[in-house]
Length: 351
Ligand code: G3P
Ligand code: MG
Image (cartoon, rainbow, N blue to C red; front, side):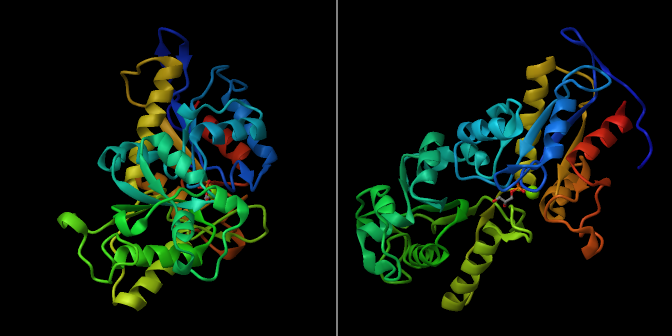
């Protein structure tokens, strides 16, 4: 269980003694499986909301590679699922970090992928992107781009009229897990081989000498845990499939930016969110920052990222990782059966 850390507390002007620790929780496979909350999750959050030896709230944030809806909408759903108020200030999902890059593309045409219909377009516009298009818009513009899919009435209704022969796409953002990999791979290959103008000859330079369209993925997960007994393919699987096709077409993969756990960018972004949450609850802490405990189910994303961020990492057995398959690929600080056991171990260690 590792050595007990010397018990210490913060003495805050507003709340007196405050425990010197904070948590970051993964969602899928830790707090929920699909839309079903994991029973241990409610007990774990009750402990952090005050049912602990200090009687104080212990700060926590949720950090997921999931996405596809606005932070506000996802927090409303999590509040209903978990029975505690989850505030957008406590929540980081795969594409939240894009709020910090929107200035580069605010007025430029961008393509967004993931989720159903125009869910992700609405999220992108909420972040401040103004010219946001989907692969369904492309199919509505010219159905022969991908002859194997007919838009459903709902998909058709979600499209915007665009002439892509006059609309150079400057960046492709894969916000969330795509639903139609075939259509999305075809459209990305068209955009990237034709300098951003779908239908232009392959090898066309980008108009007005702009750099090649940028390709950004928000979640590297090859697999994740939903409510099926075996892990499901994630956005990382889509990226591997796309790059294999693009390499078969052109001889090399296309350069891309990767966000999401375990990337350093996402953990640095989350550290700021956690610090702001701590200040929101207890004011400015001038002493050493709290010890952070990340509770996750996927060694490749949660444990690898937490270890690299110098957080303590706790691997739970309610998601992707199966202890029967052998030791995890990234060694956690501790392993626990579920998130309640993980929280109790961390608090015992700190207090
Ligand atoms: O699409 C969601 C999945 O990739 C993983 O979600 O919450 O386990 O990071 P999470
Ligand atoms: Mg998970």
